Length: 113
Image (cartoon, rainbow, N blue to C red; front, top):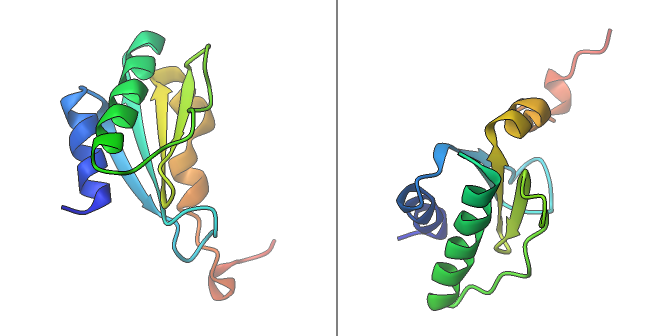
C-alpha cells in the first residue's frame, strides 16, 4: 500500500470528509502532494492529527509536531513527501487550497491579461 493510500485510509477511519489529493510533483519542491480533508470541529481535527501521527509512526514515518494548534481550524501534518491539511469546513472554504494549487504552472498555459 502506498503512503498516499495509507494516509487516506487513516483519514477515512477517523471520519474525515471530502478527501482530496493534489499532485504537486510539477508545481513545487515542498512536497510531492497535498492531502486535504475536512473535519467536523476543531476537536475532530486535533484528534485526527494525533491518530494520523500515531499510525504513521507505527509504520516508520515520523512527523514533526503539527502546525495549527491550539486553535485547530487548520492543522498541517508534514509526513515528508506528503503534506496533510486538516480543515474545519468554513476554514477550508475560505482558503480554497484546491483551486489555488490546481492552477497550471506550465508557461504555455499561462495567459496574461
